[in-house]
Amino acid sequence: MNTNEQFDLIIKDTRDLFVKKTQDYGTAWRILRLTSLTDQIFIKASRIRSLQENKVQKVEENEDSEFIGIINYSIMALIQIELGISEKADLSPDEAVIQYNLQVEKAKTLMIDKNHDYGEVWRKMRVSSLTDLILQKLLRIKQIEDNAGQTLVSEGIEAGYLDIINYSVFALIHLNFKSK
Image 1: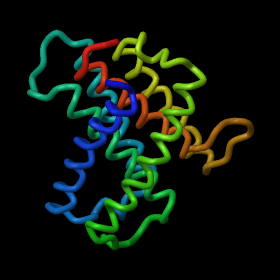
Image 2: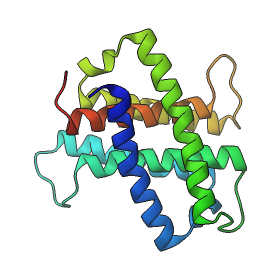
Image 3: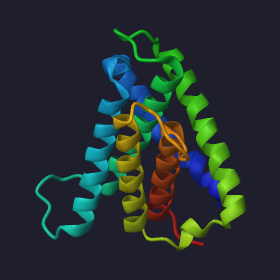
Image 4: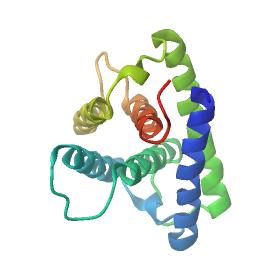
């Protein structure tokens, strides 16, 4: 199975959870500011790092569910960038999935382009390194948010979220498929 197929399988699972949660909660997340979504992703990434480092675990969760959460929150953030923050849950479930799919396409296109240029070097990386890269991207995003979105030479917030999605997909591929 190639990377594109593995990406699609991972996203199918993340999308399925997004759809189910949208049926349960609607699109209440539409009121969240980017800073709140960034903090939610930071909590999940920190939790993953804790799971990787700690010998004792008191809450029965695994890295997979946290990486899935990171992907879904990152996609929500990208939707917020695209549509703006709302004062209410203003998307129907069908509209939310359309927006979700648009953001996934952006992430997949970026992943294909970077895999071409980097030769899929991520396959030789450890999941813990991918976790650290996600945390680093989040700290960069938080700094850009603190700078009111202004950068001098760096990519913006959207690029950071797209990379976070792809790093999370790579981690889930490592955790769920045998390496090539």
